[in-house]
Image (spheres, rainbow, N blue to C red):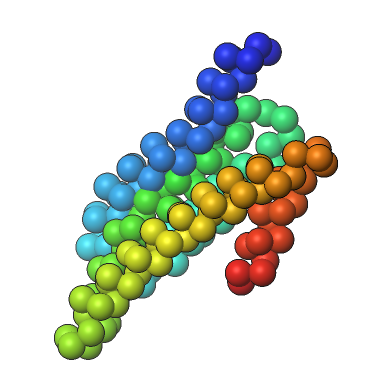
Length: 144
C-alpha cells in the first residue's frame, strides 16, 4: 500500500466515528422520546461498548475496523444529545443552565487534552518506536 492509499485509509477510519456520530445524534431524538432519557443513556453506552469490542477484535480486517468505529460513533453522537437533555430534566431550575454548560465545557476540555497529549507525545517520543501510544495511555491514566 502506497503512502497516499495509507493516508486515505487512516482518514476513512477517523471519519467513520464522525459519520456515526451524526447518525447517532439524529437517532437520539427519536430514542429519547420513545424509550426515555435514562434508557437511551443505557442503550448508548451498550452501543458504544459494542462498537469498541468490534473494533478491538478486528483481526486485521479493515471492514470490521470501519464497522466498529461507525457503531461506536452512533453511541458517541447520542451522548451529545441525550446527556444535556437528561441533565436539564433532573437538575434544579436554579442550576440547570450551569449543569448543561459544565457538560459541554467538559467535552471540549477533554477533546483539547486529548489533542495536546497526542501532540506532545509525538514531539517527545521520537527516539523510541511506538512510544507515542504508551505515553498517551500513561497521560490518560494519570488524569483518571
